[in-house]
Image (cartoon, rainbow, N blue to C red; front, top):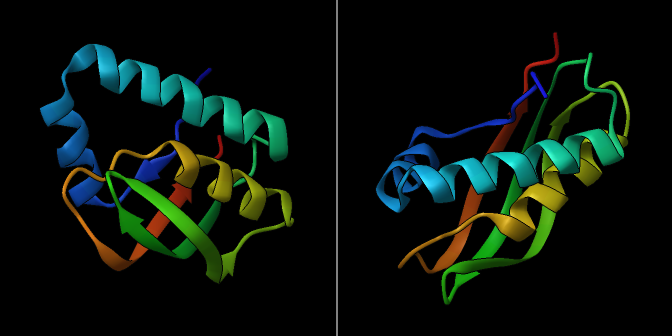
Length: 101
């Protein structure tokens, strides 16, 4: 699929440390979230606020949305479920950008 979700530079840096295989797997899961919930031809930017602990995100909520439909918010929440957080803990903001075509 040609419509990857782009994340903040810090999250991309974490992916680069995980290695190419893990990054490719994560990219595939992110594309799956987008195609399941939203129109891949449209662009959107969503900011989530989540609790980070034990390498995962939980209790995410949308705090900002520039999306043509609520499906993008669902896609962003789906992406948050699979993002590796490493040693981060506490409340963090997670920007998710879907570039469209």
